[in-house]
Structure formats: C-alpha cells, structure tokens
Length: 184
Image 1 (cartoon, one colour):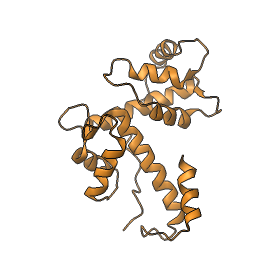
Image 2 (cartoon, rainbow, N blue to C red):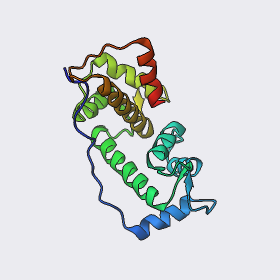
Image 3 (cartoon, rainbow, N blue to C red):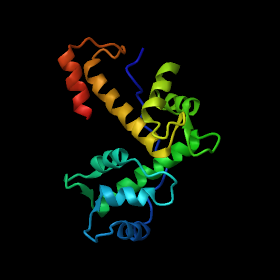
C-alpha cells in the first residue's frame, strides 16, 4: 500500500489577463493598502454565495501565497491566489456530478481517487463529517478546498516518516504530536 498519492492536483486555468486581474485586485483591496487581507479576501469570496466562505480556508490560501508573511497578498501574490481558486473551482465542478453546488461522499471519493488517494468508505464518511459545516452530509466548495489542503499536508508529513513508502510508520507519541502540530 502506498503512503498517499504521488500525483499533484490538476492544473486547469490559464493565467488571466493582467488588466482584468488588476481591476479585481483594486475592488477587493477595500482599504487601498496595496495588499489584500484575509478579511478582504473572505468578503470577496463570500460575495454572491449563500454561505460565507470559511475563514480557515481563506487563512490557508493566504498563508500559501503570502511570501513575505505580512498577513496579506500583494498584486503578484494575488495572481497566484486567483489562479489557485479558479483551478479549484474547475476541479469542484468536475466532481460535483449532480451540479448541486456541494460534493457528497461518493463525489468526494471520486475526486480524491482521481488525485491518487486510496481510502476506505468509512474514512470518506469521516472526511464529510469533519468538513461539512452545514451538517448536510456534503461539503461546500470552500470546505472541499480545506479538506484537500489538510489531507495533502497530512500526507506530506506522513511521507517524511514513511521512508520505505509502504503506507506504514512506527512512531512515538511525541513524534505523532510533532507531526500534527507541524501542519496546524
């Protein structure tokens, strides 16, 4: 058994036109600081959706692209955020087979299997339970992103210890805690 997928998430969208992106950046940068904060990004992403975008997901996205650790993204970093979110939207639409705007357990299984994960049905149920903020038995777009981010981070940490890539590790309790805290 492998210790997780070996393939990266698919890349879908081409880079957007810079002028188009600049217009969006200026609209989202409400305080005109030249940087988009987590709050500004969350408000922009939640605009037009029936549920507020998960602040944990927004924090994760900002953290990935905030190269200077200032708590926000400048225009160049925002271009990466824009592409990242668009790619995730395309992935989400691909696996939201019934076009409900949510990913159910079977659709999640198809998505993660497509990414290279081989997990039990019971574990897919646990993922739904963990990332279903609405308690509807399915996950919204932003929760799907967060689920995939957490799963990838946990997989990356696991791989550091799975030196023979057989899907099994033997670790102490303190090593386990260190693993978990390294992704928190």
